[in-house]
Image (cartoon, rainbow, N blue to C red; front, side, top):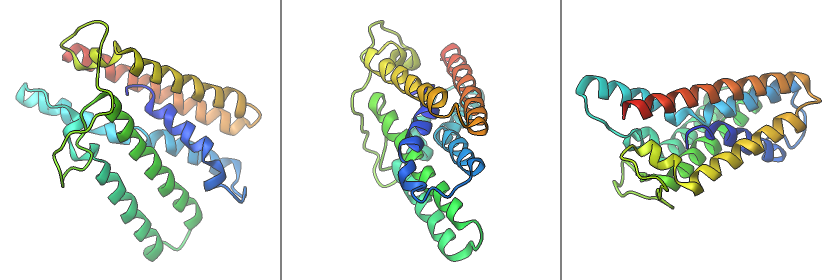
Amino acid sequence: MFIAHSPLGLIQTHYTNSIWNKKNILSEKDITKVYMFSMVSSILPDFDLAFSFLYRLITNKFIHHHTFLTHSLLFYIGLSFISLLILLFFIKENKQLIRIFIFIFFITTTTHILFDAIGSNMQLLYPFSNKNFTLLGTNPIINSNNIILQYIFTPVLSLIEIILVIISLYIVLFKFRNQKFLFKYTSLTLMIISIISILTTVIFVILD
């Protein structure tokens, strides 16, 4: 996905609220922090785009960022487990909020990888296996050698992106509108990340 990872993170956080805030004791500011963290965490695996970009500048060769360790499902399962161990044995303060952050990190990063696998070959079990997994792949209505355009012109994949964006906007505009602090900062975070995602996509379309 290109612009819907962050909306997906917000959606997941909203609909798992009964899990991470089941006692309903978090302040509005802490809840806002959780939502903001979820939107950043949900795009975290795509920070390896920077490595892909630098590699291309240096070698003039393209390497898909989905081939990096940072797009392995096992990587985020392991990182979440290590974070939980650190919380249990070394952290004494704010344990409840940090536990929530770890939970959100786990569901948003692993879902990011699984949703990427809908339209792209993914080495989900790397480094233990180099086997590629994909759920649908791309079937563009307009042929292109550009892998990003192939994705965009695959109707099912574009429809998934649109649906996720619409649901996230519904949550922010109608579920958060009576909570001014939450509404302000979640909408701002969503807007900034979406703009960055769109600009990044445009750059890679031009370069590919």
